[in-house]
Length: 337
Image 1 (tube, one colour):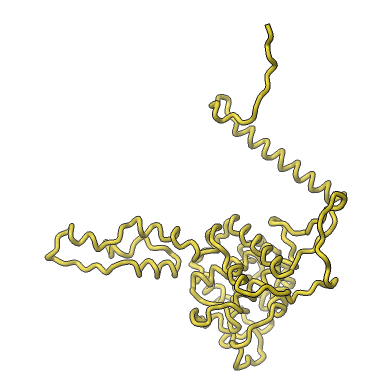
Image 2: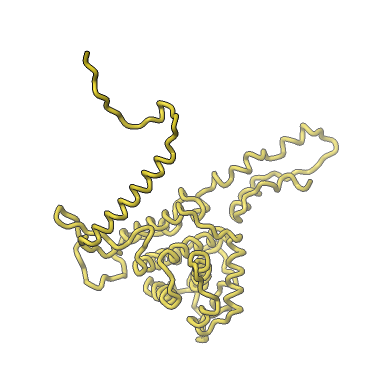
């Protein structure tokens, strides 16, 4: 029923390569008995646990695996970010008994402008701290073969790393013209790191624009209810054709092995890692004092969540339950006789 050494191998390209490297070639020998040849086969349990043993290879799939961009940012010496606050150098604001400062950025409703800045900074660290000895440059992402504009691509297009501001302007142009959300930016970063992991390629100055464009194209269709069509991106980027966009989307999906699922735990991990990246690079979110209207809104939201969980607890409570499931203490009046 086929080769016994090729079953139950993980779907990821890198994991598939590691799995096959652990398998020993099996050749049928008529002089050996079945018991003597059985030792050459790898046990099926060893092959099924490959994903758990190599979780660090799939940060975009597993919530406990560290994100790639945060690890690469730690390699840099801590320095002042190039993103300068419009108001100059402001002191950090701290809450007090009379005033509470909050930023307009939550995991369910991220701030669009600062989320795009954080994603641009993450892509910058991907490019700057890439592995120069490894990684492939696929033709579909090569800007020399598939230029995004009619202007001539310089000969050293793959030699100079882009600045954070250049990456931010490229992202801001696409998100502003296509009216994409901040959540779409986070999903874009998830797909980008999943592509780098699955396809075993590195993002570099010669392919970062087309990789980011493919990730945005896919994230907008998966996340937003009213997705942007490929022909709409051709109106934003005037010199690109619909056929090129379709081919970019097709090959991007194939390299992802059509795995476009983003669990909520993975999304939350990328959101909080982006916040950590912003704090380590002095890219703080704008803080505003808590107003009376916002406090009332937060109180209403908290009350709704409390009522929701209270209904869930009531529904889960059974008419007859074990004493072990009782939580809390119940005081009863003492009877004196």
